[in-house]
Image: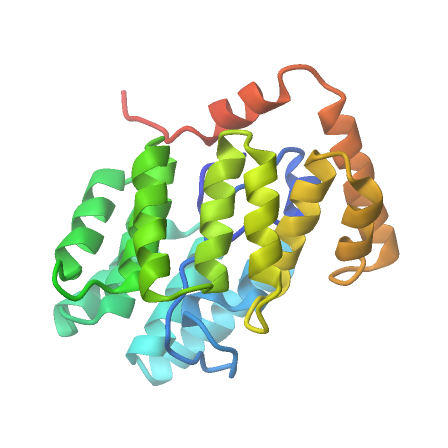
Length: 270
């Protein structure tokens, strides 16, 4: 798994392109994005599932939109597009400016924390999301962000605690179920990841990326026929077949899970 960077989730298309399992954890929100989809504006599928060329085009489009209207939603979406284009430091700068303007906005704090984590500043990311949250009236989006950061730090127990608390606030929220599932996937608990992702995709709010995650887990479990069926709902038959062929090849190699966890460890300086 690659270190979490440009958002959100495991996708089979990324798995094939990267040559390894690619991890990403979603961060849900209550706001409605400019595109009309529910959820955090930073999680537009057009950003997270884009090819390199379209990712650049998406970033440029959001840059223009943000320049003309530097509001909160445009800032979050622009920062997500920057991260998708491997410009995490610039995403941090955009959201830092928004934090100064809106220090109590939890959606901005969530996005800012994720941008910091994408840029490798895990300790500061954790401080930001925890400081923005309220112990008496916690925001599930911030708890989701905290969980994602803790998973990147290798604290699975802490991450799952954050997700579980968030699910008490937002029961059956598909992005939270997805994040919790990926946390279990990181420790090779495929059965639990499978069950959680099935619950997530049952929600009408589940998006393509979460369904692709289910296809990935099904493939890792060796349920290739079912994985193929799910994957074909999200991509062309040729692309689905290619991804599953690669997955089978990867699983035939030795020490797959050890390699996945090693690559996914946060980078440290020095």
